[in-house]
Image: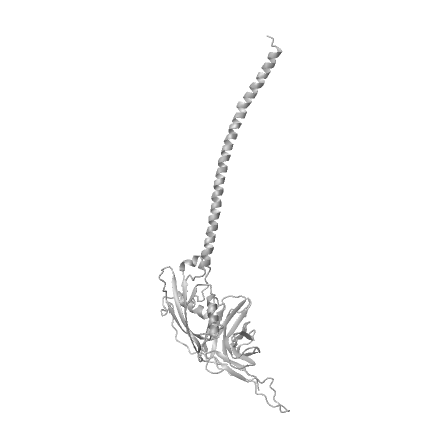
Length: 403
């Protein structure tokens, strides 16, 4: 049968349509379904992403809020003691009086008076003797202490003989729970000095403590040599160049002095009397341990009950020092004049001798008299300083101008 040209064209067109239909149904429709499914899945993922971003944003905000609250709590916590003891109160009150013409005659402590079981509140009452401006200086200085110390009561009376006398009552506040938020609290009184940290009672000995029979201390007397008085020369004039008659202003006999380290939190030491002396019955013995090398360490023998005073100008100040070995320690005195200005007078910058040696230095000419010899210091400078040391002091003297 012969197919006409028209029919053949229609058959070709039909075949083409059939091929397109097969392509669409077999290939295009499955792909469209896949695309639709992927679009739905993408919408779900976007929704999950938005929810996650919202949660993250909320968590970041909460973290910042927590950090802000912790900073606020830490700032407030740093104003309170995590704990406080009578020994620490005593050390704080006396440390702020260093360098001031202020003496404490009596101290009384009241134990915890807080009604809140989560806090501690202790009181210290000190009897003082000073002048008005020194008292104000002391109160202002103690007010700058980092921790919560409240001045509860001040009483004073004035007399021409004793000056300003009275009592100060301070309140120390502690909250044990702030320890986890506050910075490390550097106690002035550590376990080596605070007996309540190492034993149950002050009269309870260590189990391994052995009492040995006391031995007679070794007594050594040193006889110093002094320069002879000047004699008249051929012209009949006296040569005063080396003529420095000395006047002893302190003999270290009574033992009314104490030890202070600087920085006080690290340095330990003690003062006592020794029978190894230049003259009299005793000299002062100073033992110290700087604990570790640092830029600057200082051990001080501080005159306590009886101030060492100079009422008129002196040219030189001297001190006999007993050294057990050579070292790079410097030794000197600290002087407070009548205007409250402090002078640090170096007697020697190193120890180059053993046994007794007299060291001296010129007195600063700008000192206003009367003045007070506040303390004798032993200093170590630099990381090569000797850590542990022991010295004896005797015959603190001055040379007045020869008239």
